[in-house]
Length: 140
Image 1 (cartoon, rainbow, N blue to C red):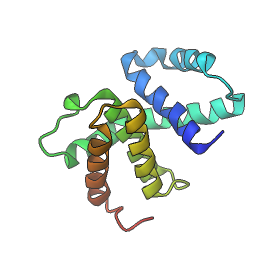
Image 2 (image 1 turned 90 degrees about the vertical axis):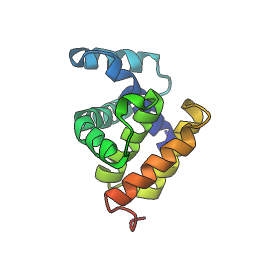
Image 3 (image 1 turned 30 degrees about the horizontal axis):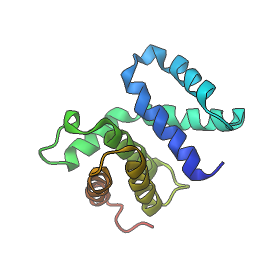
């Protein structure tokens, strides 16, 4: 499976889970994998782990997003855009295997595929602000 396909699965899990109570998380993930095709059990375990790591960091990620988006509260974000930004910011801060520029590029691609017409520009703009705010603008 390509990294892009893996990232897309993680995005879908991260996007859907806030709609359910935390105690239903494992059941919702299990239901998600039943509908996914061509994903091995090992890939499911890896991607589920990453999604859970991101969800565990949501309060921290949201704090950073809120701090860098003057005048924008999270409830004003489109849900797709917010999930994309959370995933990208997690990768930028915690996933050493993914270069920062790749995280941003892949986030824009997810926004193009799943978001609205203005999502790619919005996501790119938010991530550019986060890049500077987190001091990551000198990293590859």
